[in-house]
Image (cartoon, rainbow, N blue to C red; front, side, top):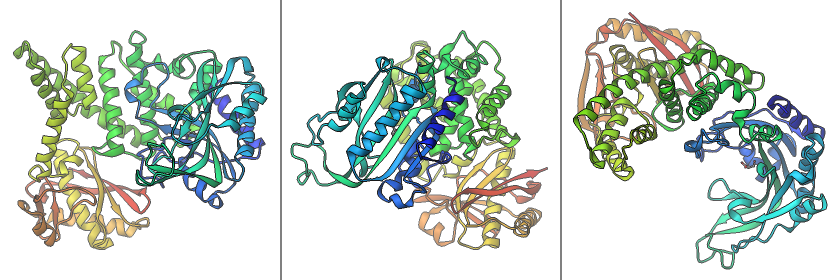
Length: 575
Ligand code: SER
């Protein structure tokens, strides 16, 4: 059964069972700061487990794209993907654990056995067995499966207990369904609430867990099945790369280099989902994950022996998902990917030259020297750490991980001292146009504060030679008039040809002068500050132009929501 058909049948099946179909949530969790990306279908419903009344229905079903980066080094093998679609059905406010399990297991079995036509001989289920830390065997699930005539195996906490996602929260035993020995579906019974206690008062005798597992009166069900893996199993293939559309996509690359090709397609797919969620490449958090995925794909494409049609691949992959998810492949989205790609391609060329020369000059380098080289490539050419390590190891050199981490920490200390400034993080490069956009960025922030009020602070930024972007706190869309006024103020300040001046001073002094600092950024005791006439004062590491007269004409391209309470403006200078 094809992926699209399977997705449709799953939702249809659970809708017929009275589950309300809910659309997928954003890949950026809205109510859970403990994860960067949505990693499971239940994420958007987390609050419903403790407050069932919040749910539009006591029974929901979804297909949710998720991003999981924990196994990213395994991607390229038969089973791991950076992003996948998760089929799920959910129940809240359940009172009786046996009843809940009976319904959940029977429905899952009906879908597998009747709808998908998989006989019991190809299936077994695992259930939770007490492995000595206090929660007793899940005899209920075992009984239900046996009555259905399905083989049962037992496993402990590691395999058959789920959650909580943070330190505290709903959690419980799971039952996993295997077809032909492949795990295809995980049914989680949120029967307990884990409460953190001190080790001495831990409520469970003999438990090494500093916590108490309190039985919930409001219980819940959370199931998850990886759509691609289930489809591959049903098609009798051991890998998603052997089924459509993955098999076709991988042929866009280089069939003689299967592992690299799989990683390129896997990453490109995740990139499309992440960019569509409104993320731009950057140096922190999810922005960095996106950057790393793009750079790794670019690096691997560079190694292929054939040319890779990025445009075609992106267009085809986006079109495949567009009917089901909000996917962007407009010019602007493509630009995000292509800007980062172009930038990194230049760095790959520089890095290759550098590496070649270095290896000629250092005939048998020590591990310390190789590690310093790796760090230099990371720092100067923007190679993600894993990429440098992998590349050097393909040339038979070993990087000392611990020493690399020490170099990294040392480097961070220097950056944090303020001498290098924090702003560099937001600059894609130090080209002339990027530097001009950087100065215009300061003018824009000052103009925003003048027009919208002094409560406005910067929440994020990204500056490249193509354009500048600022995120700031504000709770509504800006009017046409406001945007025009802001644009005019910036252009006026450019016309005034104001001097841009750099100073270093104690942080306290800078803040008391009213210097703007990005919200949430960390600064050292001595900070670097840039002023533009009397108009703008910001904590910043530069670089900037000397006078605003050098900037050209400033234009706002777009104003949009970035996240709850945060707006985003993209702007550009024209010469
Ligand atoms: N939350 C569980 C999982 O991710 C089941 O959906 O496996």
